Each structure stands twice: as structure tokens, then as C-alpha cells.
Image (cartoon, rainbow, N blue to C red):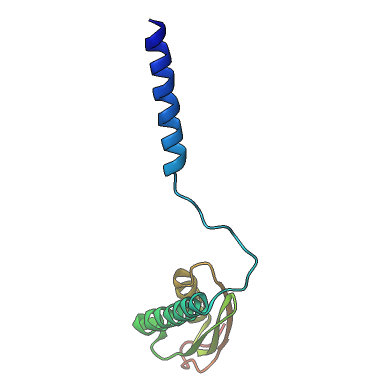
Length: 121
């Protein structure tokens, strides 16, 4: 019985040793600046976000007469240009927020150029 206990203890020790040895190793975190590869991923993702927002704005029928520019800068998406009314401005902001991910949205759109039956609010 004693030999069996020792054998079981050795087996458990071996299992724990193997489990510790096979756990995935995480690379150490560093305060080094991002590599060029990281920067190119950021550039691509900002271009993707900008393109997605522009495409979504163009698909929205209520924004057909709007002149909206989308610019991704730093941690923000900035909307500029003119829209016919306040509802169009709000709709454009909602679309931008839906596609901005973790980026903030700054709405610099101006209300103007609306028709006579729909004055700006």
C-alpha cells in the first residue's frame, strides 16, 4: 500500500510539472514604441473605419443631399460639411458612432442648405 501511495504522489507531481511546462507563455509587456508593423495596422484600421463610415453615410437616403466629410484623427472620427436639417445631422452622427468602434465621434456638421419646406432647426 505504501508503494502505491508513493507511486500516486510521483504521478501527480509529474502531471503538475508537465502542466506548468506546457502553459502558453505570454510575451513580456514593454514600454517600447510600436513597430512599423503595428503602425501600419493602425493606419489600415483607420482607413477601414473611415471607408466604412463614408459608405454607410452614402447608403442612407436621408443624407443624399448632404455634403459630409469623414476624417479619422488620433482617437476620434470627425464629421464636417453641411446637412439639410438637424435630423440629418443626428442621423450622420449615429451612423458614425455605429462604425467608429472605440473611437470618439466629433460632429462638426453645419445645418444649412435645406429646402423651403424644411427649414433648419
